Length: 159
Length: 159
Length: 159
View 1 (cartoon, each protein chain N blue to C red):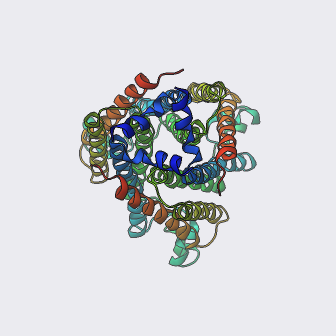
View 2 (view 1 turned 180 degrees about the vertical axis):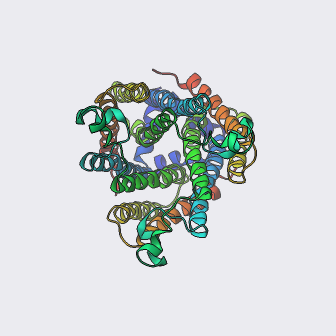
View 3 (view 1 turned 120 degrees about the vertical axis):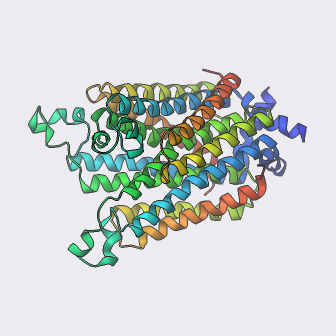
């Protein structure tokens, strides 16, 4: 039993897997950061969606006026949803790609470009930068995930 | 071939991985439950978003009045989205954490606290409990995921 | 080191894992496709949400009129969110299921039915098909994920 445990935990000693674990954790933390940014805008803009969240501002009409949408809050929420739509496929396809035995340098290239693109995307969304800044950063991350998917299917194809 | 297959499927015999598989499955099932709760509220409150979903209520204006938003439906949907935003990072970072060779007792502590916090969060959202009930249960799950991410980066860091 | 690397990357030679990698990649790519469908409807229907996305249509009021919602755009977005809500649990629970040592034929049955159901669900949502077309395709995918979760808990249960 002990031998098996040691063996399976050693996936973390595989260099490609270590690189994947590092970048996957970084982009997942970046995605989690969007919750804090949304909360920051909700509190500073006083724009809430749940009545129980405005109870500390008083009762009745005086609290009700804070149940509203705010452009900055909505923008942060859209950035968060876009992260879910793009970082989830990166996490999933990237894990299978890391296990498909790619060269370390090729794998690092994929992980680094994706991570850089998603960080740029967040800045492009929140500042906001003029288009096609956000569009391009989105497309780069999308293309990297697609390239990894192609490599997974090439290595694993069993339909 | 047979030997390799046996070896790789034995990840499930690693105790930390078994604990992870158990708690990850429980929180993913809990997240899936939100679909049923939303459907329950849509049907009992007669509040739908797709015209084809109201066709059984008749044609034209008589069905159109059920294309509306309802506070309970929207609340369940927000709870579901919050699960996606928080359970996805737990699943991803938790998987890497489970493979990074932590002590079983430390790992169990992380998994149990996160799972408890997310179940509390759902109750706090749906009842709803007065704040800071929901906020605190969210923050506890967030902190647990952050702690696991720190351990993954410490074990795997390869930039 | 080299021996360990070889060993861990060989997970991709496990037939159940290869089948999982294939179908998981296909459904994640299908989910990513929803971004392109939403973008297609946004551009052809001229219905945007970010002011910077309409800048190429002119300044001021002439561009502002394109900041609006469109039924086709919203329908594609709901399909995308439904994918996130259902394909994320399939990816997570399916991964643990693939590692729990199921029979290849049973595993293939789960993966194939889920993948088929989600492709049908997308057509049912976008065409749209009359109910219960979309509802049934959703329920089939949900039931498959539930069946895999049961098998994971049976194999891994360590609370």
